[in-house]
Image (cartoon, rainbow, N blue to C red; front, side, top):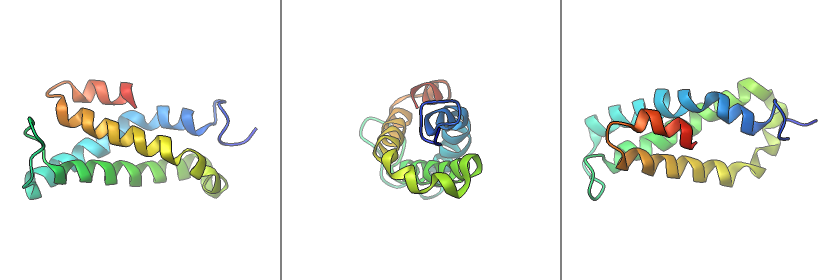
Length: 113
């Protein structure tokens, strides 16, 4: 069984294990710090900023790469390409969900991801 099957040691299972920490602990924190400090461009119909959203995405991607490396080591990195489009889409839609939810984003984001 390889690291990217649907078993307990799969990338999907790893993303489920790490989702709360990635989205709320890293992504939301990065978005808040960068958005408050450097944010100048607001999303339509939201108080959130584009700069904060980009920090959310970059923070989640970097932290997820580290988390997957900790789970699988170098053996899982070459096969990561197969999951990359779905992973990037999940991060993008999580970012949009964070932009357009007000006070429940910390509850909703890990459930969506």
